[in-house]
Image (cartoon, rainbow, N blue to C red):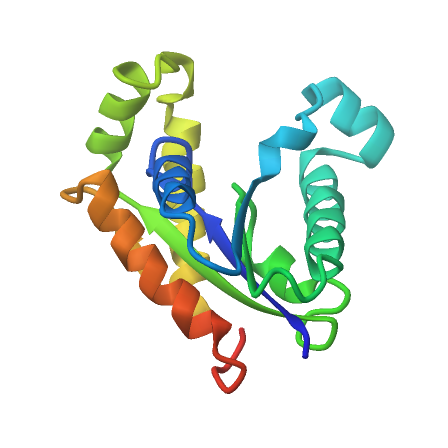
Length: 180
């Protein structure tokens, strides 16, 4: 049976890390949570020099993460990856649908809410930019085009967003459930 992987994507400030951490705190049996950025994110110059640009670095890092998660073995029923990555990158990854079953969910929110979160609790005002708004719109476009589930966190508490994620975890855990 291929490993089930739930990739939680979204722009900075959409609530994906907070929701995944809340889900982790629930200690669901057979579920493990991982954070993409824990591997470290190189500078733009390094991405360009060593990988051919940010998009190629992101794709290579996403593929490495998915291979790692697919190899976790039977002790993990569902691996959850908090990742600011393109859904199309997950779908195109080697092993998709064979070595592992994946589902991608987008966490999204209103741009003004995302900016307020980044300027306030996150303390990352430098990320509240038009470029982040464009990235969020791009991710939403991919999610819509690929008919992916979207959790709008604009008016949700962290616990409510985690509740919606947990429902998806149990869906992806079902071997009969369709993957991407």
